Image (cartoon, rainbow, N blue to C red):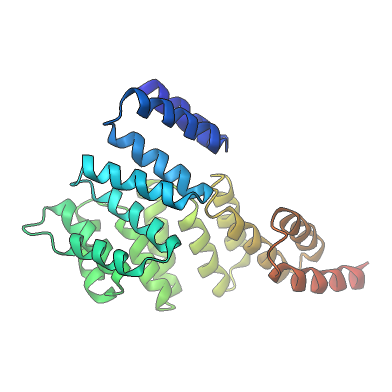
Length: 257
């Protein structure tokens, strides 16, 4: 089991998601009660947009390990893609209704409160969780400060999350870059984008690339911004927002030549 999990994880790191799924398929054929395998395959299917199949994997994993609340948030994300808001609410209520919560349960409750939009309650629980060593709590504290347009505090917590837990994906780098952009700290924002891009995160790579275009434009690096915008358009031709950027940047590049 471990060898197949390592192999699938290596394939995932290389961006070979369909190949990774095949390894999980083999693993779960050999051991159909392996909760971690269902969780990992569910996440891969989520990335690839196979949402109904992903949901089935998360539900199977939850049936095998109902005390693992990470699984509930994975399922929550899939339900969001499927537009099943009522089921999302019901899932969060399961978590916020935990009786006699442990310190770890307290973190998950605060996280559920965040997703429910109860930011004041969430902040209390997240602060306690961070004090107890649950460093992931800093990411959600950063998100709350971000929503409040308190960019300095948001940046602080994103950094605490990255330095403490080690970013598992590029979300914190992307959000931090946006906050730094709001503060007109363009060089720092670009550094955050580049750090996030090193993770090759399929969920946030697109937004990081778009933000790179915007930051380079703000820095007056029009030729570099135009080149990156062309790369973005070629990668995501369905995104019409880049067309206006390209038209503007093309004008700037001509003026500068």
